[in-house]
Amino acid sequence: MRRKSTRNTEIEASYEKLYDFLIDLNNMPRWAVFAKRIWREGDTVKAETPQGEAELWTECSQDAGKITYHWKIGDAEDFAETRLYKSNGHLVYEFTIQEPPEAPQGMFDELVSKVDEELESLKKIAEAELR
Image (cartoon, rainbow, N blue to C red; front, side):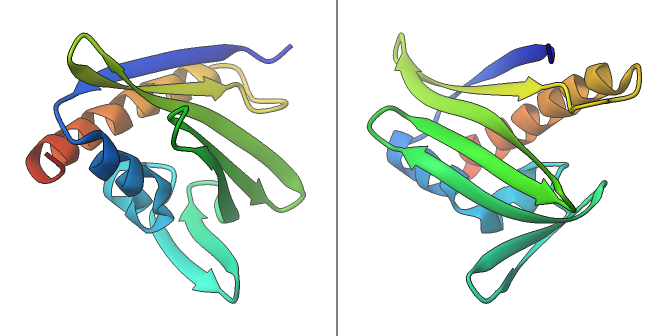
């Protein structure tokens, strides 16, 4: 079974603005280490990632605050589940990452660390621009 880790951060921002920012894949290079560059080829969104070129898409439910990011690199597909919700007067963005299939030892811990960096970057952008 693949390991999972859920990380989160509290963010002072507008729920609607932050949700819209998160579902716009063009914003990923601003906060996500995973996507260095985004472009479109027809109806497909592509990204330059540390693992190579990827196809990206999302499944979203604004009412539930859910955003699932999907990607395909070569023949391998994977996803990360996220959720934006209100708690005690704050927004919380929760990001669940799972261990890639057949990941080398130590890779998962490195990915979790990257998610922590991404959440910190997202918090800074959101609190500066999305209130």
